[in-house]
Length: 460
Image (cartoon, rainbow, N blue to C red):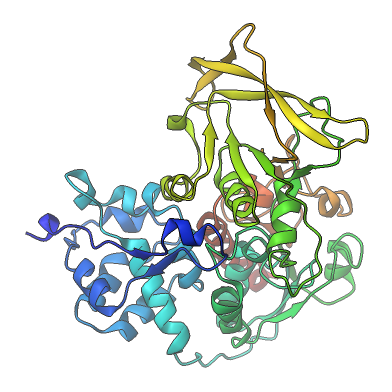
């Protein structure tokens, strides 16, 4: 009977209203809604959802506690494997991970694992679990980057007694959680800052405005400052561009810059002086989650906002939920469209984007059908701003200033599954190893590296 109960819908802001503000779109479950949704779980003997979760949360166990109304026990179960449940419940691609593997989803809608994790995480922020008793082990580890990988690694190491210091290049802690993901998807002070405070309570120290490779180096951390191991979780913040004519015009910028101005520097808030220009019409080039974040931000800043993507909607890499929300908010989607030149006036400002129509040909190495240009299909889209959301790669600064640290052709640090790099005592994980990926995959990499670091330090 359980799988015949319809999935409990989640309450959301009205699209017409939310498209004009930066308040959170999704309101989440209350206890009654979460408890009802929890009854849909079949509690499989071999839960595929656990195996599909990058940090292997014991999902049926925490759901069972919710069904019984015991949220504290549900929070304790999640805390064994995840230090950021309120964040993961909001931004993880559950549809391709835990919920994508849910048995209930075979004949109906999968159990809303993400929404229940968010509910428990938010409850825990208001009802903190007791801080575990930690016995210091006398060893020091440095973490480079305070994004999801660094936070997960720091949390796990602190719990087993390490003195952990996290070095962050920006002025606020949180990495992509604060500069990349918009407020309407992930509130900063209400959620991110409070989740990070839980990690501070474990004794983790954070040092901001430290650019590793300039302020300090990996070598100096190991050789001069007494750290026995270093974990690099600095993400992939170097933007890519198309290399087409006109990309140097005023009004062309990367999604990284656009979102950093809006999120970390709060350009959307009238109380802040951060400059951000959207003009009347913004075109965002790309089809991933970053593109959706950028185009929905532009809409909220008052512009007509359009997505341009060279494949069809079926191939969009963004989460289905984010595409759905964008459409509800009035975002225009120009599919099978590829830019060829940014158009500008004699003063150097963007006036439009020249494009060609595409059609899908044979599958490429990723398995997706390759887009092929339709001859003679040139046309122009009028716009004032073009935002390139084409993916990112790791900043080469750290690797270039560190002795004996191997990198791939894409500029990623080479590391094994446990995070070990080519240099003894240096570990890495998350986007700096894989290229841009998800929050939960980065957390999983940070947790694996924490185990490997502990093993390494004990062997010294």
